[in-house]
Image 1 (cartoon, rainbow, N blue to C red):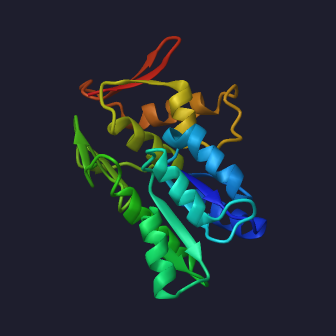
Image 2: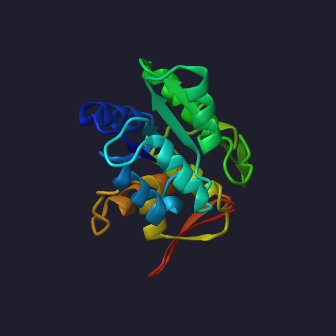
Image 3: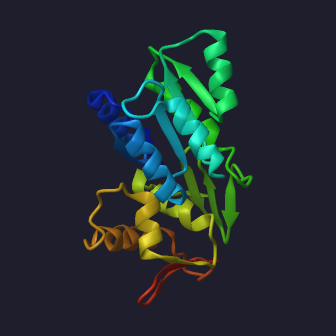
Length: 224
C-alpha cells in the first residue's frame, strides 16, 4: 500500500515516512497544503490513504479535505491536529476527514489508524486472501503456501498482496511501481524485476497451481 504524507515540519514528515516504510508501506511526503492538494488531484489513484497536518502553509488540512471531497475523490484522510476541542473535531469530520489524531501522538497509534482506514476503502476488501493454495493475512503480515508459512520480506509481502487482490489480471510494471514504491523511485531500474523473481521463487509450487507469469512488454500476472 502507498501513503501520502502532507506535513510542513520536514523532520516529522521524514519520521513518519521511515516508520511506514519499516512496516512495508510505500510513502511520499510534501511540505505544504497546496502541493498536497495538487498531488491528490493528479495522483489520487496511486495512494491508499493520506495523512495530513491540519495547520499547513498555503492551504490547511481542513481546506484539503473540503477541496478533495468536492472533486469526488474519496481517498481516506487522517488529519493530525493540535486542536482537541469538540467543535474542531466536528469541523474536520464535516469537511470530509475520515479520522483525526490529536498531537502529541505515538507512531503506533498513527499506524493503527491508517490500518483501520485502509480496511474501509471505496470497495470492501477481504481481510484475508486465499487462492490456489496461497493464504495471506495482511493484518498479521502472514502468508502461507499449502499451509507452509512463507518467509517474505516486507516488500515481497506487499507485492504478493497486490497480486492476490488482482488474481489472473495483468498488472503493468508501472502500476506495480506506483503502488509499491514511492514517488521518487527510478522506474527504469531493475529492482522491480529482482523482487518479482524473488517472490516467484518462493510462491510457485510444483503442481503449477500458482504461477507468477511475465507478460512480455506489459508486466506480470499471478495465475491461480
